[in-house]
Image 1 (cartoon, rainbow, N blue to C red):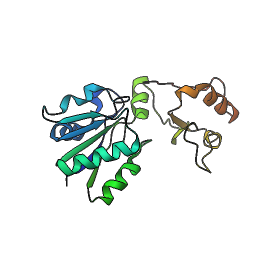
Image 2: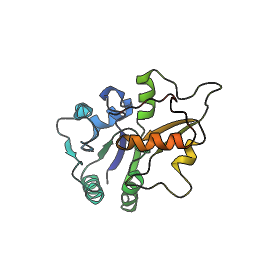
Image 3: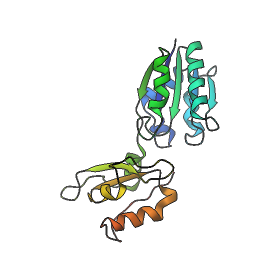
Image 4: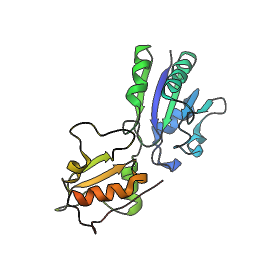
Length: 193
């Protein structure tokens, strides 16, 4: 059995992937990447003989089957994901069947878009005497918020909020922030792609 690596591609720029991520891409026998989110340029480290596939038209079961099948044939398989695999991904859902099949799993973190967005904007997520807490969250959409994690309640903390996966609901996000007591002229940075 081979090993399946979940590698974070970072926020989009191919040179923001980690050194370990590029090494694993170069060593991989098979790579499955999320073509709708990960730029093709992130595949520049793949070897010529590497099997490369795009998962944008696959459902979770098909991705799982692809990884399981390739791990029985190859020593090193990479699942290349946007950002960091441990944040807003399906890492747990993919790792469970691999674990059950006795396939070793490794995780390589990626640069989160929260950090990349702050850097691109020239801003800090924490400021002395302003905010020392950062909440990474999202607005309810196709995936509802779990009980006890109300977006409005999180916004009432008045700390830095990094709100993911919500650009298409930006008006509702702004309305919820104002409803939670944020001023209409509160400083914000909106980043899309």
